Image (cartoon, rainbow, N blue to C red; front, side, top):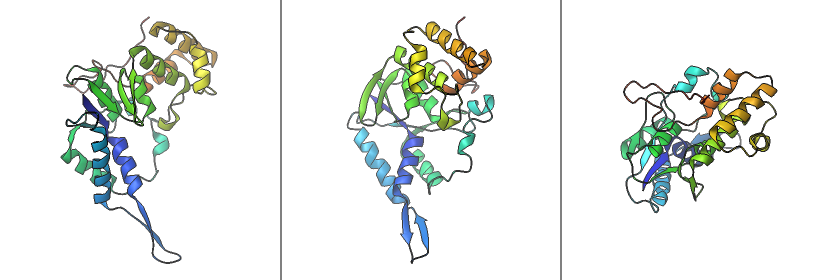
Length: 243
């Protein structure tokens, strides 16, 4: 097995966990981070993952701005101005030096994991990430200590569900009033990609949205798979429905 680790999540969450509030007196507080603590936590967590596969893991990093910012200017705009944990930049650099790190121009770490997991380069790749988006990739997924096989059918359905409900954490709208439960009802017993897309399109029309709106949301929520990225030019093959 080859572990494909969501480096963005691992580093961010580890830096958050290692921040300490130091109280100097009854009025003055300062926030501190010892980078050694953050690195130790990351190394300990990686060691736990290596119980499954003792080989060298691959840290999958994001490269900004991404192609999604290019097709939708408000992508992740809701995160602007939010404080990042202390030490994030330095820890990213240290992790990239200590481990085998991979990033691709204009792609998020999710896409890097998706491409590597669905390609032929690595034997038995396992994505390590708690991100729900990774259930939109046909892969073996380690999420919150649970090992799960995500089939292509499951991955396509998860992706179509997100096309209906959107992704609020990334500022992707979807359909107003449509959450996970309603999205499931809208897809109903659709099984093939063509059947699911037809129901998604119909739901968008019913909500006075356009075909282009549906296409845009589908492109924003799709995690790239093998064959959808040109490693020479850095161009992304944007998804098109089969008519």
